[in-house]
Each structure stands twice: as C-alpha cells, then as structure tokens.
Image (tube, rainbow, N blue to C red; front, side, top):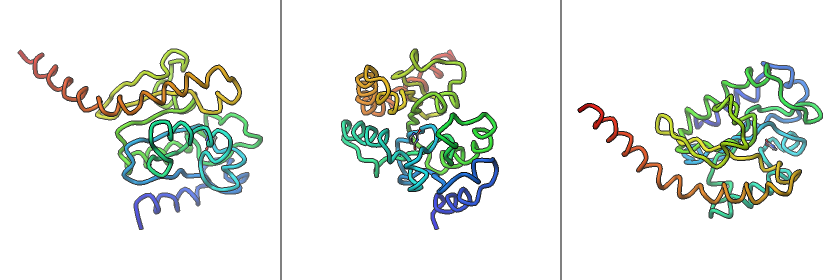
Length: 198
Ligand code: URA
C-alpha cells in the first residue's frame, strides 16, 4: 500500500474533533504522490462531503478551468484542504478544528514533498503567513527551504465577487514561470551565501 493510501486509512478513522460525527465522508485530498504542485483549500463543502473528494462543486469546476489554463488537469496536481471534514452548514472552521487536523496536512506534505504549495483562501494562507492579508500578497511567490509558497484567492471568491475572477486567473497564469524560475532562485541564494563568506 502506498504511503498516501495508508495515511487515508488513518484519516478515515480520525475522531479528533467534533466534525467527525457530522461527516458523511472524510475528504483527505487527492492526487499523485509525486505531484510538484500542492493546492490547499479550506474545508469540504456539501458536494465534497457527499463524494469524499476535494473541490468537486462549483468552486472545483472553476479550479479545473484554472488548471486547464496552464495546461494541467487535476490528475496531475495534489489537492487538499486545511480540514478534512465538512463543518456543519459550511460554517468557518474553528481554531480547535484546524489545530486537530493540522497533523494530516503536515504528513501529506512530508509524503508528497511538493515543489510549490499554492494556498487558496485565508485559512491555508494563515497556515504559512499568519499575519498577512490576501489582498496584499496574492500572486507573490516566496521560497523557503526549497519550497515555493504562492498565495491565491480561493476560487469560490470569484463566484461571489465577479471582479476577483480576472485576478485569480492572472495569478494562476504566473505559476508555470514561477516554477521554472524556482531553480534559478535557489542557485542564486546559494551563490549569495557563498559570496557573503568573503
Ligand atoms: N472549498 C474548499 O476549500 N475545499 C473544497 O474541497 C471545496 C470547496
């Protein structure tokens, strides 16, 4: 059994917060173990809870279009959420629920070892950039320990606020170039370190 399949079994048995008793299906995430890109959303909604798969409702349809705009399909990337079970009535996840679920995403990231982590919306943004606002830092990549972090608005934001659609589309289109340049950035950093020795 693959490392991810084993992890999915553990997640399916999780009872670490109150959301477990409300769920129809747990939504661990999906995609290849060797994916270079990892997208992190917020929480499963109604459709995801029914199917046990992330981003299969209207926001997911838009995410599929965004991926297609850079020549990718969802089968080629990994898609996960900050929490793995749907909050009742799609309410915002509570801090305790996010904390209880944190270990699962940590382990997914350890297994997948993505080159680029794309945060979708404020909850996944807060995991990496707790005090920053999406309005200021969306579409700006940063590199830490050889992983590129790239904050984007949540695709559902475009469904509620049409003016954000173009912003999200433009941010997505930048991803291939950022990935391609990622290696150069790493090399430049090593050189800079060596230079500073003298
Ligand atoms: N919104 C999310 O953040 N995640 C999903 O899986 C679906 C909608």
